[in-house]
Length: 206
Ligand code: TYD
Image (cartoon, rainbow, N blue to C red; front, top):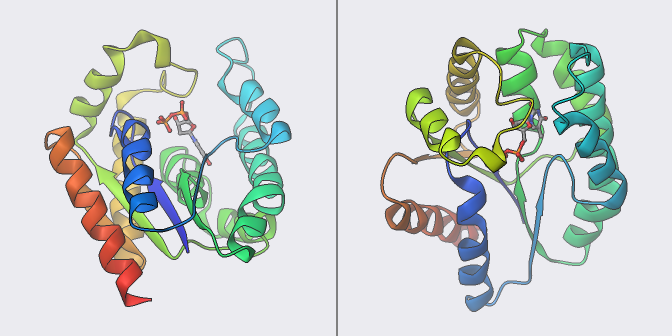
């Protein structure tokens, strides 16, 4: 079972992952937690290039190809082997981040992105995607309070982040059977409960 977590900036998904993973382990699942960009040694090196505030000269096509290169390595080096071994993979961001950020956010042609994404992942799609949805102002405010997490991509204009959020909502509407929308503006314990419930009900369907 391949589960991904998606959401705009400050949705709090990263801080929710450990507790969700602990809960699923208690329920008897063999859980592998990973994140993008990253997840393997090579992918982490690509992440450093993408996140570095000094790399202001990165152009959109370079950015896309770096995210996809990191993902290709991640899929073959970690995600696919774990799934084949019967594990539950919990991944903080995946292909939908590319569609939301590079597609809706930067207005790159979505069909081109879908084609490249399919190539990079060898067609591997999540079984379930949780969208931690939050209004843009609230998410950015949460993130600004924690300066250490502020990276090159957060520095884009607010209009960009609004397109990203709308993009996610549209993606969820296109494939409702894969997505579950969680209201991430609620307090963090409630968000955690909602996430657990969404995952468990999907696991029971399988
Ligand atoms: P990260 O520090 O991991 O933030 P978050 O906690 O929000 O996940 O940074 C990941 C950033 O990279 C985030 O701004 C979203 C962006 N991103 C893309 O633009 N495209 C992608 O394909 C991926 C995976 C991430």
